Length: 129
Image (cartoon, rainbow, N blue to C red; front, side, top):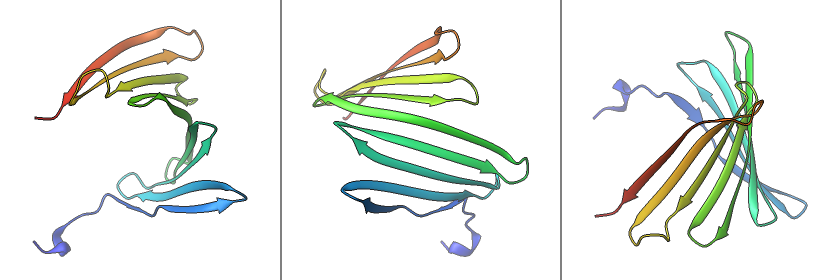
């Protein structure tokens, strides 16, 4: 198939670099249909990793950001939390690929950052055939 007829939805570049002894991942991108510039950063902290993403919509001039932390406290079990201040939501996920051989169980909940109330809990199971 000719690439001329294909429409790209985004343009991005991933780059890693060292600041002192800390590795930092940088991911700038441009989302074509939304006309939005986005920059993501990720770096290890202790046993886990911290992430930040900033998005700027050029037409509405709206800026959104989110902050996250993830850690694998035990091999095969991943816990992550991401807060998006624009909608006051804290998303907490736990994935476990050690509970059942060949399957990954994942639990997700959204918590209102103002009230501390959970909106719902979703549990999914993915497996390999």
